[in-house]
Image (tube, rainbow, N blue to C red; front, side):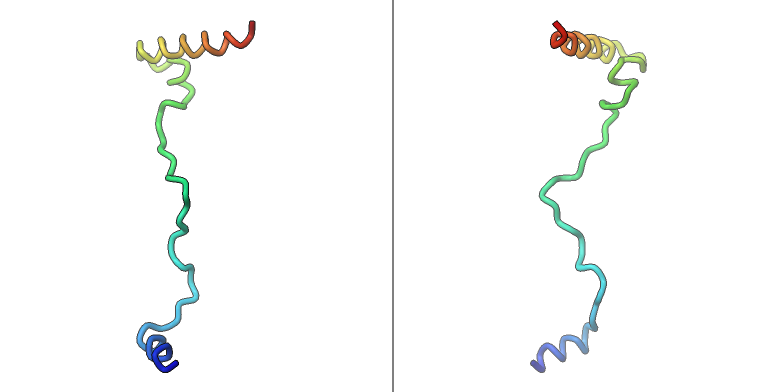
Length: 64
C-alpha cells in the first residue's frame, strides 16, 4: 500500500486519456488512384486512359 502511495507522490495522478487507441486495422494510405481524374484517365497519362478503358469494359460486361 505504501508503495502505491509513494508512486503517486513521485509521479502524480493523471486523469487524461490512457494513450493512443490501438486498432487492428492499419492506417489507410491516401493515393491519387481513386480520384475522379485518374479513374477516367482525364489527367493526360496514356496508361491511365488505357486503364480507364479497361475499367469501362469490365463494368460493361455485367450489363449484358
